[in-house]
Amino acid sequence: MMDRDRPASGDPLTELTNPSAPHAGGSDAGPSPSAVPAPATDPLPATPREELSVDLARRRDELTARFAELQCDLGGLVYEMAIRDHIRVEVLVRRAAILQDVDAELGEVERILRMEETGTAGSCASCGAPHSSGAVYCWQCGQPLLEHVPSHAISA
Image 1: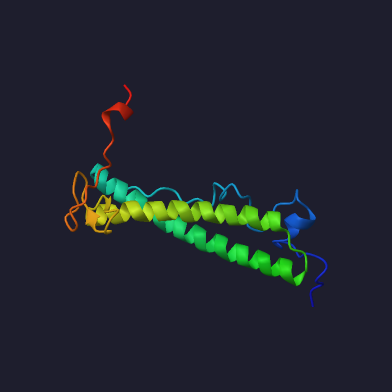
Image 2: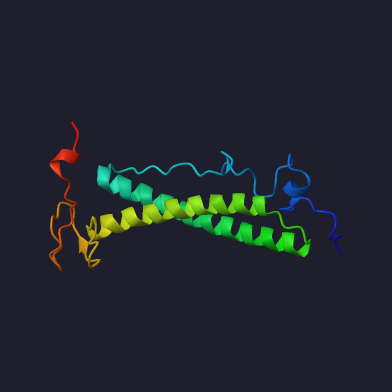
């Protein structure tokens, strides 16, 4: 039976009792260089657009895995703090901010990939219909897609 008052080796609360000790998940700076997989090389030359898609798809997969790991770690940390009746909000906020950054980057990568796959550049602010790049008016509702800026507002 494990003593609840004494954190075990690799315990996520180690940083609470000893801030200088590394915690189980490593540093918040990211994975160690040995944990980062080497980039895969493609024997056939790819067009720049294909190369970008492959890199973005790989980045999406990495971010998805990182997001899941951070989310589980945050949940485990909250649980451990709760059972010890020692909630440290600043630690939770710091970890949640890291999770939020990964989530924001993941959302942006997914948006770019979706745009590449569908050929859409955005959606109409009035009706939400997708439009291609260079479109001036919405094909569904006819509203202008580009914001009109008066000439005096543009400075040279």
